Length: 535
Ligand code: HEM
Image (cartoon, rainbow, N blue to C red; front, side, top):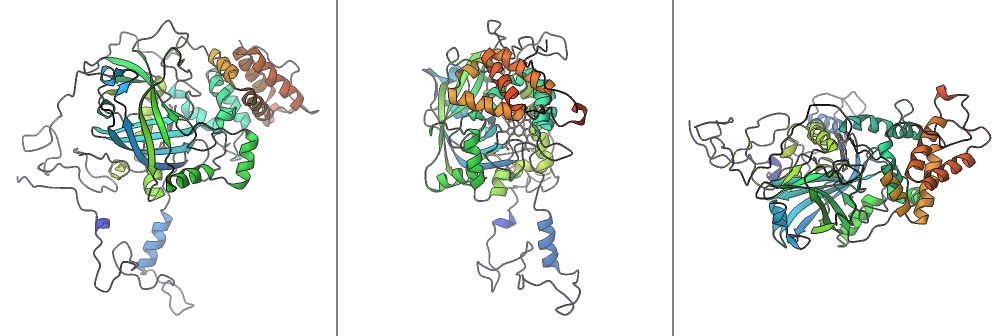
């Protein structure tokens, strides 16, 4: 066997050599053939039937037929930009190496290239960007150790705390499978049976549920992660992006006015700001706790429906991100970008957060289907460092991941014939111990309503007014049972909160007492005593 010195196969698209007689403008097909007629299909006479051997037409139309790939099952509508992350080298006043050995954070001023995709969640690729919905905030850091993806949202918490519930939640929030119209009755049917979502609903139905644009919104990793230092010691952490442009949210009325004129405003705003050199910036802040159960807290630190009080767990800045370049092509970069919570570098780790564990399977699974099994060979997803694997073939395999000097005949490991070898361990491993039974159980400290009440009271009065009015509008289309259950949850959070929603529903009731759209609810009457107990 010979030791070929293989490098990645040259992309034919990279070659710009002109054939004799061609100019830089000459149209060709994908085989490189010059196209002399791009207006007329080949027919027998200029009114006759067309022929099938017309390669150019068939290539053109059949490629067009395949232009769309499956849309993301959630977060279908998005906008993206390139930029960089610059580290501060510290966590508060301390050297960051005390907490994590991740290389991108260590040195003050160190820059790592990034790509960010912002998104809305529920509706499809061209839906209005003014809808009430969480906003995605996914960042790919192309670090020297390979890629790190921080797949976050604008809000700091989530609706549910167990990945098992995610497909049901998304089904309830997406359009009705019969009418293809989103239904607040289906939405609140699920939410009312999932009391842990009361906190998220309090944010979502307030102006925080409609950020004014992507530049003036926060981001958060939402789930709990770990940092590992050189000794293999862990702390648990939460990540938050703070926009240096400030935060701006819209009331329902503002959003409706804007939507009447422009339903692409957030994509347009991001693109134009970057084109005009107004580069948006965010500071990355980290909250940390020791890696244990924290029995002193009234919530579980692995529960993503909870905020970590920033008086007790301060938001410590670790670096700054600047977005300064628009994509050259929306599809190649923004649509085909693939982020996942499993994409971590040395020094960053998972926690046992049950949502995070479920997410980590889901992302790369969907991307192998949505983009294809070789999605990591696309330039937007490939790390900006050497990749050397024994993975081969599959649809759209664009090059072979061999290292210079590697024997290309050896696509397995271990081998004595010049194949790839395992890497050195970069530091002490983090090896948590588990002593418990295998089980299916909810967590103990659920505390579903307290923080929802805290959040309600922390809103400004115009935000509370908008929240109540939005909830009353949405709940007015629901059955009495759903309304009463929701009012109960709001009352548990804060007595005034529950009372205001109940009063609003009573005045919205009208003479007929609307009780939802499902035929099974015909004849039901709206109870005069909203706010029953579901205990
Ligand atoms: C996108 C699953 C929870 C943020 C997606 C996608 C899936 C998914 C399948 C489409 C990915 C693609 O096609 O590339 C899940 C599951 C969850 C979950 C199973 C819970 C168990 C969350 C949470 C957040 C979040 C809690 C917020 C931190 C995002 C974002 C995207 C996304 C930002 C869009 C990424 C992009 O721009 O490409 N999720 N998700 N997800 N998810 Fe989740």
